[in-house]
Length: 248
Image (cartoon, rainbow, N blue to C red):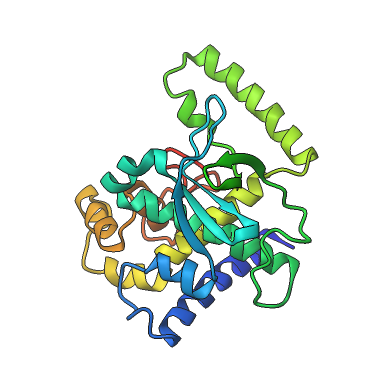
């Protein structure tokens, strides 16, 4: 599958879920998108808040418990979620992407068979109510204060770990990118965002903040999404909406 067809499939999947929200009268088509309804009413997943065990250096905001069809948010970060609702919403949308995209790759049905019969094998961590599946955190958060030499060494180590992860069947950069793009499309649909953006000069930070407030996402997520849909110049293939601090 080419990159463009893969991207189109991701966007079609997310837009399909938005259409289902409208058809079931769960959403009036205005921002913000009710991400809880996507999880619970469309994908049939429950949402649980509990303490998730983290390995040294990890920061896990959310994960999935496939056998119980649950999205688990790490209660350790309850204050962060309360203070920055956009982070919580993106975490939920990201986990929805795992459930939706990789079931789509495994089956032509609309059943959400979480991770079954797919090559995707996430890391395992423990939580208060049982094991969960998670992704590794983004390295950039951990090395922000390092010297140039330390950053170079860390990036070399990270590259080697990434290669090993792919070899062992764990999460690849493409998997991360896919679920990030799904989450961004779900929370900030291009047509809806373009319609809202006509009121603003999107080159101004004040405009980005107001759009982020309307869509209930972080300023960083909004800025990157505006780049992705061509309203602001400067998007790059390496940019990720999940670069709010943590990659789930």
